[in-house]
Length: 226
Image 1: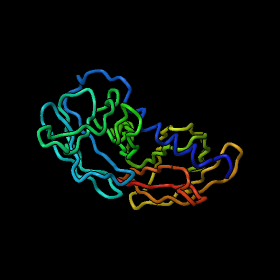
Image 2: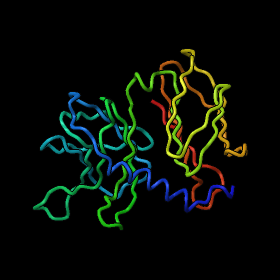
Image 3: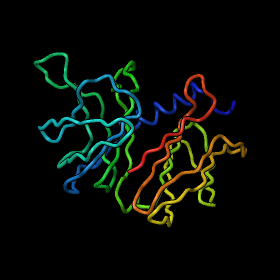
C-alpha cells in the first residue's frame, strides 16, 4: 500500500482537524443550536467544558459513542475549555471551531493534535451537519480521513471521495435491518478494505476511514451507530 505513506496521512489528519479552528463564521442568528461530540483519541484532560455566553458547561465524553446533545444559545464558534493550571484564571481554551453553516444540529469529532506550533490549540475539531434533513434515518455517512481519493462500492453503487470529504448514502432498509456490502478501493482499483455493514430503517450509521495504525497495513475503519 505504498500510495498511503503513513506520515503523510497522519499529517493530513491533523490538518483536517486544525483547519476547523481558523475558518470564519457568521454570528449565530438561527436560534438555539444542539451539538454532540465524539472523541477519536484519548484526551489528556480530566474535565472538559464548552462556553455558552458567560456560562461554562461540563461535557461528558462517551467511549466510542457520541455524547448527549448540548445546547448553544448564542455563539459564533464552538469553544472547548479545561481547568486552568492557574486557579485565578479558572478555564483554559483548548479547542475552537466555527459553527456549521445553516445547521442547528451539529456533530464535532475531537482529536488531540498537539500545540507545539505557535497559536495552535491542542484539540482539533471537525464538524458536520447532523440534522435529520441532511443525514436521515436509514442512511450511511462515509468520511475520508486519508490523504488520497478513494472509491467506495456500497449498495450496488460506486462513488468517489476526495481527501477529507464526507458523503451520505440513503438506503431503503427494513425495520428488522439487513446487511449491505462495503468495499474501499484506491483510484487504481486496488481493494484496501471492506466488510458487510448492518443497519435498520430507524438508525443512522457513520463509517470513518483513517490511515493504518502504526505498524499495521490495514486501514483503520471505525463505525458509529445512532
